[in-house]
Length: 412
Picture 1: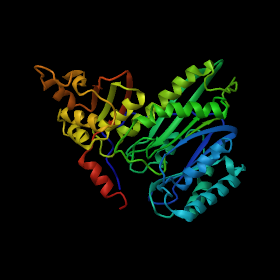
Picture 2: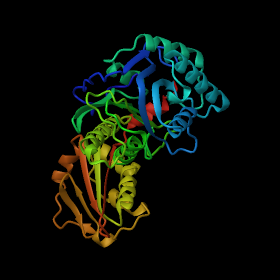
Picture 3: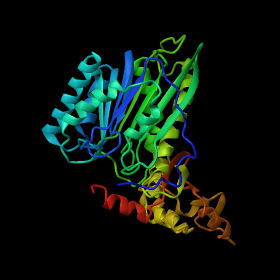
Picture 4: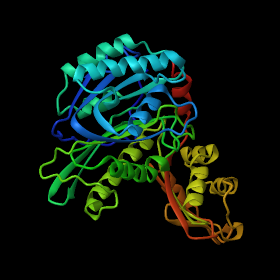
């Protein structure tokens, strides 16, 4: 099923530079889609460190469980195999067998240990994934692999996405200039923790596994765990970060809190947030990109929860889709969050305009500039709940008729 490109799509796509020792290959294996690549293989140099964060779903897929165990067993990475069109989730022993067959095939093809293989799948839940075309696709992709195929890689992992998601950053670590490249997919079933996302990031920095894991976990919490499209958490969320150590003059860093990593942390956090925003802007049927900033909460966690209550409210999201400045729905969402809020100190600002203060509408409130703001494609909502110092920002999109159509027709 073809989808119109999101009106929030980037006007141009970042061109990701090659990273020493890393090649990417794609193949059309016919797993679900016809006439397009649906298998991705990323081959990494020996000695690459691996870190990962995964879905909190209690029905996590077999690929997620395999990747999680790989991180726990030491975080070494040589090859990543990804397929789109079938999530290999809720497929029982057959799903585990497909993962095992994929791992064995990939390990043999590149000459590495099975623990150095990472597998990810995205697509329909509950349908058995036949390993045969996937195993063939591994070899086709490896034979076609090259350092400059990041764009093809991003396109191969798309499902209901309408555009590829790519980001790159440079950073300094001591005397070394390092590159961070990332690709991702995600459009619907997006909600913390993580989303129906696959994200693969590679850097040529030399960073030990514990430090790499710490950097990824903290950065993901402020990006992928602060976005929502529809409040639904996927079975397959996977974010993997690999550090090859191939940058010129790279010196291995052992601790995430090492001051020499300050610029790298900045660059990684920027890249993660960039990809997270791209996911929201490709939310199924989205026409508005919405930033919700909550302040005055008991703590950061409470502020995040209030922000997500607003962001996940169908009434808020449909009002924004209809360009209706109905701020009463924001009040409703704050109240249902379960977090402390002082009704008589609650303040709301939309598009930089005060609409409510101290629990009531602003005297003489003129809705005209707010209505004008609602007609744009970037919506800003600020809420102060008046009980503390906690702050948080979350991002979401509107809810349109197109979301229903896409998901009603998803399996056809």
